[in-house]
Image (cartoon, rainbow, N blue to C red; front, top):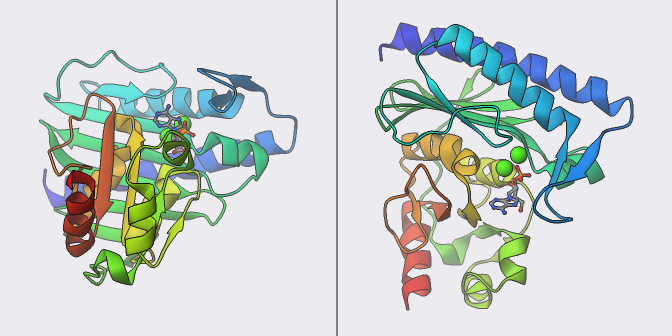
Length: 259
Ligand code: 2AM
Ligand code: CA
Ligand code: CA
């Protein structure tokens, strides 16, 4: 897609994100409606649902032919990556949203015939949106971001998932020992932001497509690899154990995981 088309889509999505953020704070003034999905740690609120429905309406109006994959099920049952495919995570880090009212994100991504094209991750509490793509650049609000320093695992902080620790996925002790330290935020989007900004050298977790779709666009644009934890290409239509990192840390971590 050409730059002016990407800019038009970017401006539209940035407007939707502002509206969705307003919806978050309006609802935080009253009691949230919280319910459990798969288990007591897997929550959904009325805001997750209303944000997703809002994005569905807006995407359909902007891009009528598109297929949309949304976490809360208001989108389409997608079988392939042909044409325009949008990914929507209406609130990422719902436990943080409910318990902390901060460290949660809203994420969208656009792929065209399987090619990562544009991604958006909004840190809702700080009102910072990380957005862009390979033919566009990566921005934090209006500020262009540069490629983070290519630090190895031994020289950086690694973001991991608390749930994966509980379930003994990853060689957690070895990664913790080999890095400068482990950080656990509780939101895939917020963890990926740390990597995008060069504050952490890697993030790894088992994730669904809407958890990693935007980050894949943004990290690859910043020349950072994002693959499965054993270094293979990600399947965009299923759960994957995903690793996004600086090139140096990526090979360090894959080596540890495959050892
Ligand atoms: P969510 O809040 O949108 O569900 C927290 O550990 C991070 O992992 C959040 O980004 C959360 O997204 C995501 N997450 C929670 N449960 C998950 C699951 N069963 N599979 C994949 N990702 C999950
Ligand atoms: Ca999520
Ligand atoms: Ca979510």
